[in-house]
Structures are given as structure tokens and as C-alpha cells.
Image 1 (cartoon, rainbow over the protein chains, first blue to last red):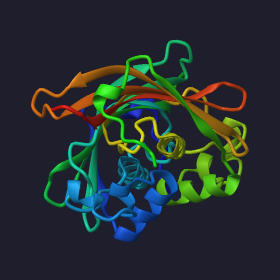
Image 2: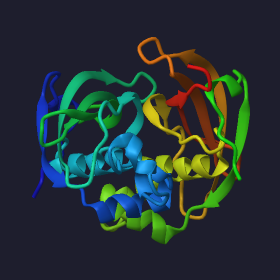
Image 3: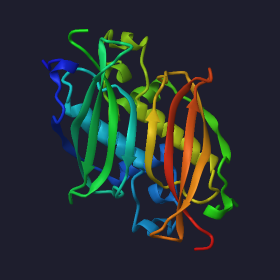
Length: 150
Length: 150
């Protein structure tokens, strides 16, 4: 039984590390065909992959893969990860087929909501790295978290 | 034949509107099971959908759907949409099964790269609305665009 964590249970500076996931070429191309059908992601036009030394994953695929890692790592216990928004999202390096990704979440701030005192906003800095420890994705999510004592 | 548009061909204030897409419950749950397996997106735990008056799409699914609309609308002609990052991403309202989304992209700024003068950065403000014209997703993407005259 996974415990529910409330706003009061969290601390600034808290870090959680996710498991890792490998990206297959098939998954990369499947995602791209559905959501981001561009030559550098699908390989559908000969030669176009060359600019990037081969196919690269859609940045939104990277974002989705990291979300899965975060969900599975349960930084808030059984409390859902409900995002209000994201700031400072960057893809410093592309993710390629065969790469492995692992992410880390760090709590930057915890703020009670003024309008809804039974909730608060947790800013979580997420950094994802490939198997060479190069950062492939970084962003700061604002999560809506219930309080134990409104 | 779709023409390639270069940095010099673009203008601040330029707006392009995408086609629209409807979100089915099956697609919503399929995406969530793979990338964001939480009760409010998958409906896997009875009653949990109630907080949101029913299932809501993963915010990353909304982001991916809007990317597809943008790619198909070809705001840069045959020049790929290559994102360096995203700022000020918000999901003001959730997207639900049966909803229809349409997006609009507006060029906010055009800046030559100092380090690589053959490229520039275009900041594109993207706003997506449902069939009731409510904003469900907004963000500003930074795109890497080649110049005609380096």
C-alpha cells in the first residue's frame, strides 16, 4: 500500500531518482509518425537524418518517456502528479534509438495556494540524462498538491 | 512542392492556424497507459475520475496532439520545426474525450544566432483551444531556423 503524501510531507531540496528506460528505434518512429511526423524523427525522407547524424527522437517523446519514469517513481506517494504548467523546458541534446534515459526530480519550492488553501503548488525541477550522463531534457513542473490540514 | 522558408522570410506577428483534431477516449487511455498511467487519465481506479468530472487527457498527450497539428500546418514550409526548448507552458483547462482541438501559432520574435550566423531562433507562441474556444494549452517554443544568407 503506497502512502499518500501531502504538501506538509514535502521538503525543499528533496530529490528522487527514477528508474531508467531504453528507447527503441521502433518506438521512436511510431511516436513520431503519430505526433511529430518530420524526417529527422521518422526517417521517411532519404538523407534528411544526416543533419543530426541519424534519427533523433521527437522532443515530445522524450517528455512523455520522462513523465512515465516520474509517475512510476511516485515522488508524492499515491498523490497524483497533476501539472499546472512547465517552465524552462530545454532539450540540450537529442535522444537517439538505443539510448537509455534516467531522470531526477528536485523540489525547488512549496507554496500554499491563496485562493484554495486546501492545495499548494510544488515546483519540481526535472533533469533527464542519457547513458553518458549528458542532459537530454530539463524542465520545471508546477504540481498541484493537496494539503493534509487545509 | 512545398517551399522552404528561411529566417529572412518570417515576420514578427505572423499567425498561422492549424487544422483541428478530435480526441477519442481510446486514444486518450492508450497514451496514458504508455506514458502517464495515472487514474485521472486511464480510469483504472473506480471513482478517481470524479475529482475532474470524468477522465482528462495527460497534458503531454495534449502537447503531442498540438505538435502534430503544428507540423501538418507547416508554418515554415518544408523547413523542419526543430525545438530548442519551451517556456511558459500552461494547461489552463483539461482536454476530455470527444473534445476537438485547434491551435494557433504567432511569431513573437526572430533573432540571429551569434555563435552560428547561418541560423536564428524564432519564438513561436502557441495557443490551443477546445470546441468552446477555451484555452486548453499555451506555450512559447524556441525554434532553430536556417538563414538564406548566412
